[in-house]
Amino acid sequence: MKSIFSQGPIYGYRMVLAAILSLVIMASDLKFQQTDYVRQTLAYVVTPIHWIVNIPNRVMDWGGQMFTSREKLLADNESLKTQVMMLQRKTQQLAIMQAENRRLRELVNASEQVEEEILAAQLIGLDPDPFTHQVIINKGLDDGVYVGQPLLDARGLMGQIVQVDTYTSRALLVADSNHAVPVQVNRNGLRSIAVGTGSLTEMELIYVPDTADIEIGDLLITSGLGNKFPEGYPVAEVAHIKHDPGQAFAEIKVTPLAELNRSKHVLLAFSKPDPKPEEPETPSTTEATAEGASQ
Image 1 (tube, rainbow, N blue to C red):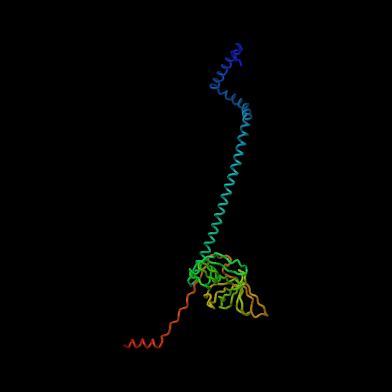
Image 2: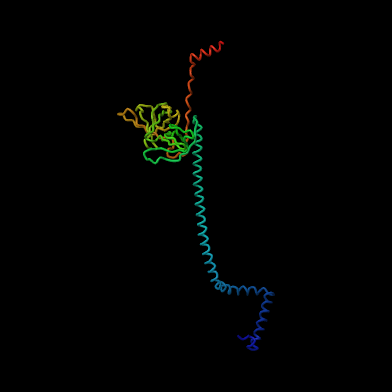
């Protein structure tokens, strides 16, 4: 490529003229304010050209930002899903703990109402036989558990112990068809027997005369007869009464108060032994005592 100065004197003059013109323009720009309007006018013409030239770079930047934003959104979405699942799990655990605390408080309140000595236990198993209602608890011979011992929950009588091992015991629930408990109506003392029907939500009163004074909603408690259950344990509530003129006894359905299909924490009640009657003094003992006193 040839230099502009090698083309002849005319090109040299052009170069000098361009330099002088540049100096004049710069001096005018510093000296006069009118050049600002000229520069602004020229900027209106040049700015669209700058925008057009910068379009490829802006498109590439926009595409990169969109791609990055989408990846970030997906990552944030996965992170939020994980956090939501963890919070839901904690919420479920909190609900379980609250329900457990509520049941324990009810159990403590129930234990305060029982006059006999009590022992807290926990259900650890159920009998798989569908035709019987038995549960297994984590207390046994080492804890003083005995056959026939009453089993309670926070609401009422659950059943009685029927088998005792060293560390565990088996209890028969009141709803079992082979279980019966002597009861009385708390309102008037009317006595009867509540037997299980095989349903966890229903029992039946037997041998209640059709003319007996019993009403729906009456509370049934243990009567203490038979020396199996101490008197006063809540058992059930009268739910349905059917009178048949041709029958001597009324058909009465009752609802167990104990939560037979829900309770996990239970109480074992130890009956207080009956006080032994004082042995009367024999005549020989009386005479020996009198002789000793006279000597």
